[in-house]
Image (cartoon, rainbow, N blue to C red; front, side):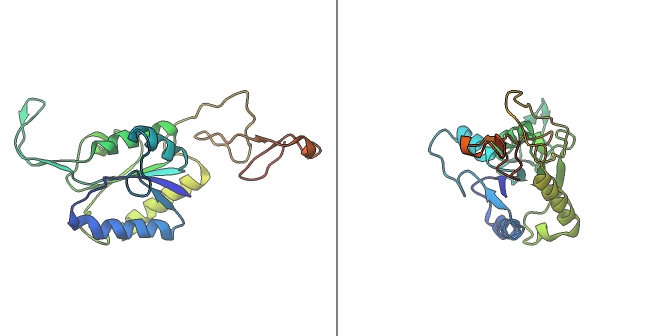
Length: 208
């Protein structure tokens, strides 16, 4: 099962070990992480590539690593009192795309990283603040439970928020595999198979 992982291509060396452990754990769970610039490389505009990759994924993970540190300046006219840590802007773009597609999302961010999708209540998705500098952050029991719940949603096709996908009324859908978040359309069978039916689901082999 392919999973879109929104993360920067560069992270501070202190985060390398934890990221490697997390990606390995995903593979051990039978998941294939997909990230533009890491597992996939662009041959066209990056945003177009992200959309194409996400179309092939059943869920999304957003990892908010610090990319910008601001110690002086103003936010909404007020002076910054503590260091402001910001993630890559692609986290926000890719999270919004995943949300609009209705696929299950789980969000992790390093302690202190804020704004956008990392502000609680912005998205109806699991949001967890963790210490990415710990090599074993993803092995925490509480986080593991949340990851398993998210994985279950990916497998069932049920998003963790109330998005209902648009269904083309002119195309037949599979009653077994179609969910509110993702319609699964049937494929037309060759004329020689008409005695079995005219349509077939490529996932469960349902015929109609």
